[in-house]
Amino acid sequence: MPTATDTAEAFAAALAEAILHCRAFGHQWEPQSVEHKRKQRVYHWRWLCSSCTSEKMMVVNDRTGETADNRYDYVDGFLATGMEPGTMRRSVFRMEVIHRMEHATRSRSRVKRAS
Ligand SMILES: [Zn+2]
Image (cartoon, rainbow, N blue to C red; front, side):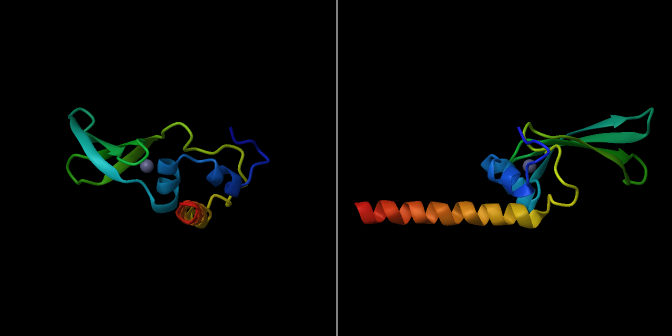
């Protein structure tokens, strides 16, 4: 678990692949179901991220289509606690994706040379 002394870089380095991808590039939201809440005059529209499996519920005004609220239920490990404010930038997560790709490329070429 991240602690107050962790950096965003350390948090990024420990992330599962799917979560890192969403942190770097955004969620891949896919609509799941919609329910009309007639009394509240809204739709509850549920979405699932096909990458990290976090969930989102959009509360949509049933006359105007305006979004009244977005509620998120993040998959375990997605949220960081105790990070310095402003340090959880997408650029940090992009760099982690690049480092992993570079490492994978190096590992592959090492295997190739060995055979
Ligand atoms: Zn996601």
